[in-house]
Image (tube, rainbow, N blue to C red; front, side):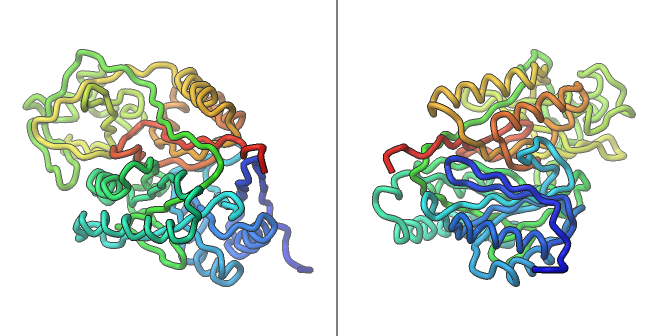
Length: 395
């Protein structure tokens, strides 16, 4: 195509067959053409797309894909940072192509979450499973995982995650909540020409590539307790901890003054809740003028939170990846959903480059989220991932 500017994009092919393209050029047409060319080269009929809304408009991207890659099915969402083959980035768009030789993928978008019955979601997941079974042979249908992307500002992730999980039976579920570069205004999901907020996307993938689903975090609970004594559960806002103004009580617990609280403080001093013997993060999103606190996760009166002490993020993440490597017999690449608060905390503790390098070395790609999904749980300040091994040699 003479006369067209060369796209400043990189493409990376992995041994398991997956192929990643990334760019920081705000040209949706050029990127859609690059996707179409790579999809043709690796025989991919499905793509995952993660993009910064600061770089590219979702409608323009959907339009470009319709024009240049009309037969390619895709699903994805806006981000709060990207993980590209080069490591942690911001202001990029990333495409992951699934070649049909090893992967069969089907997806559905559930719109209007705020007015949606959860039974409807479970039903949609069941029909998606039937669709996938119809498309794949018996053998491949045995090895299936599910991905979900949810509007990170929908206040619905817990209900949606458990409704999806309910419909999946024993298929492992993993995913991330869409972000908007920490603006907290609107996040976007895209799927096969549809562009929406207040939505969730479920993708079912059958594959003969070995995989392992995992999560890792880096905090340990302390004895310092915060009991939610006044809240607005519908909007995930806590007004009081221990019958005291929420920001004041939280600040006192972590040895700060309320005026100094920022997203960085919340990232560095997470709070955790105990569920079935395990601790899970319940991250604070921001402080309001009245000293109330907005959360990334469901919250209610009577919930007991513990202040958590972070441990070394780089070491904790490395140990988790080594564990996965042992279980899989080697990692070819990882699709990862990484809480934006981990990114902020990594910057704050000056380990951003180390974490970025660790992701690069282990072939991690994915995006920065407003929450992570893992099996039936919606989490925060966690990295959830699916690691792929190399294709079996007997081909």
